[in-house]
Length: 94
Image (cartoon, rainbow, N blue to C red; front, side, top):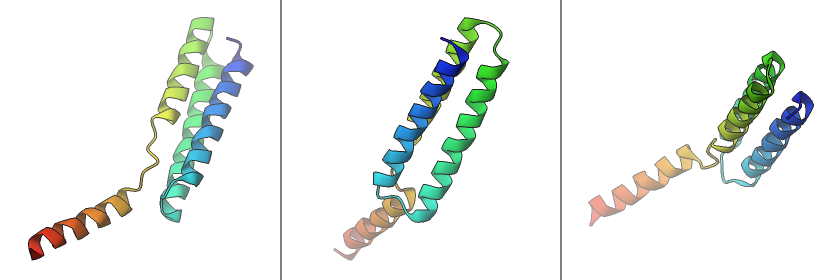
């Protein structure tokens, strides 16, 4: 893969993840923090792509970046913890 094609793949993964973040039930703060992580990973991946001197290294940097972005969660830890606390309280009350 060429460096520009690899960067395009990173951008596409980031766009897809940002859309998933927007569509999720995350709090506004969680969305902002996660988008910041995506943005940081895009920079990291593109720097790795720029630094690559062999085609295989470009491909590896692209795959690592895309995988890292794709594996970022889009579920709300804050909301999940709150729901768990409510469930636990309900069980305790019975």
